[in-house]
Image 1 (cartoon, rainbow, N blue to C red):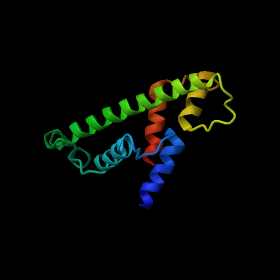
Image 2: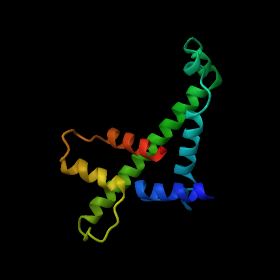
Image 3: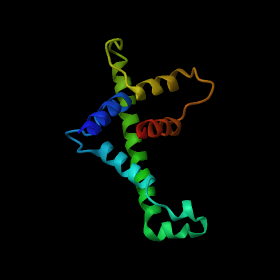
Image 4: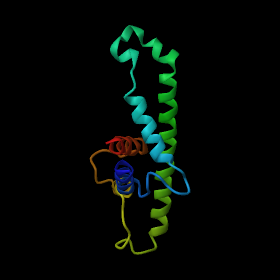
Length: 133
């Protein structure tokens, strides 16, 4: 229960939504749990590089790829929702609006104040790394 509360707090700060949404039962929470389980699973290729082919046979590589594709599409959806909400909020006073980490990253991308270009793939990578910790 404590972990679920902590996950919801972190998810709200990063994505602006709970990890366990009522209308979307556990999409982000379930994906992040599945990803953590897969990343900590035993991999033959990590221990014995010459036996890396066994990871393909056991299905580990396929499950990891499928989970990363699902996370990628989820982050695409979240970023698009935030872009739409930012364009809708351009007419309103944004000083009273709560901003999450995705809003901040999109604002940095829009303003171009960084020395490098912040692409959508960069934003998704940052979100993935932060959400796993």
